[in-house]
Length: 260
Length: 260
DNA sequence: CGATTCCTTGAGGCATCTCAAGGCAAGTGG
DNA sequence: CCACTTGCCTTGAGATGCCTCAAGGAATCG
Image (tube, rainbow over all chains, first blue to last red; front, top):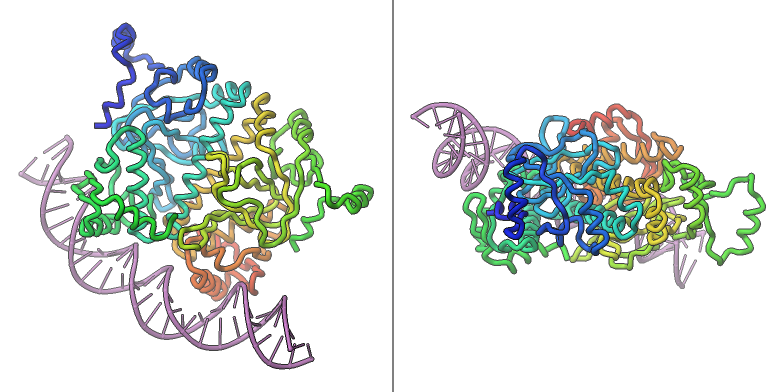
């Protein structure tokens, strides 16, 4: 379903498509100005000049298969990654071997910004389905924005957005019960899918109950039970990982019990 | 005890002290190059040229008294703030009126970076004791770093550090029990105090049990009980808000049960 | 087809929350 | 100076929400 997003090359450029077939092993390059994700992704808010500059960087594209990692904790930080299609999770390893999921990322979202702090990635990124990403060399991006305060502001704003995102997750982990957490999670997912042109009320979860649980600070059994509770309350229909939000207002109320 | 930090003017500059007394209502201006916090704060890692540029901005200093707010959720974002002395808390208001504390900030730390995302502050900053801050106009800082990739990198790294900080807090909230949380909190505090030249083993908490609880995702009674448990285990001595870490290794073990 | 992974559900236990009472220190007003 | 209030902390007792352990079903894979 999501894989439709994977075709960045439009029919108006058949020559390029033909070329691609012949140079298959060479890394594909992408320009932001023609990307269907430009309104969601890095170039969001940038005008013609800056867009051209971004285009000149010709970001390399790469496919990452289900279960493969894009980068791991401790890897040298060189690239910021933009998701082109599919879903990733970010996670940290705990001492006892368990993992803590710190985020899920979908098309148009950036990953790897936490690597700047120490020069090495602070988390790992794993594909939850077959995915494609753009690798954005941080050094190049930095050079570019050193000459342009608009560009720089865009990058800073993206980082700030990450901070805000984590703020709200902290709130969630710090002060909500199981139903509120799962409701918040589903509503957030629903909104992000909607912003990408997908249905806000019906979707397929790319992550396991255990991954949701880790992200929300609860056990997988509790996640499962909470799904069942929502079904009984006629807020959701659930078939494995297929979710249909039946009563959006009700779900919102379940979430708003504590927040905004 | 911490209030000693409040005197940025050393005895070697008595003339300036005298001046301050006469121009009290006018806003004080500060230069980074002579600030005793320069190794911890914004200019950390910058060389002579960039330091001079920062100096040219002449950040305004401001006192904020106990309980007063520096900025509130929704306020227009114009400044990043550096703590000069004292302690702040960042917090969000929940719908039911309760607050969720999202961080504590001490000398040399930056606040307000979450405001970039939307152009308005996403959290409020409240002084937990009498404090002093530097107000850093974001627009000016942005102009400066638009001409200098070192400067820009420093700002980005600071934001990234904030992201990493929140990552670890999420881990804490997502996967630790009460003793692990409080141990992590105390060890973190201890390290930050040490980096500022204070004792790592004996200090005064600036925040209430309720604020600690909100930050750590537990009720104030549980915080209190956990303090008592640590005292019984001879890890701490506690007298109200005065804390002495008696057994650092033991406390570290209490924390390391799950992490690293 | 067996092995594996993921999910659901039940039963019981426990950590933390909730409610409640009381102590202590600092501040306030008579 | 004392009585009173207020804010903050501690501790107890009981309630409960989530976790742990366990069993079994369904889908997927080699």
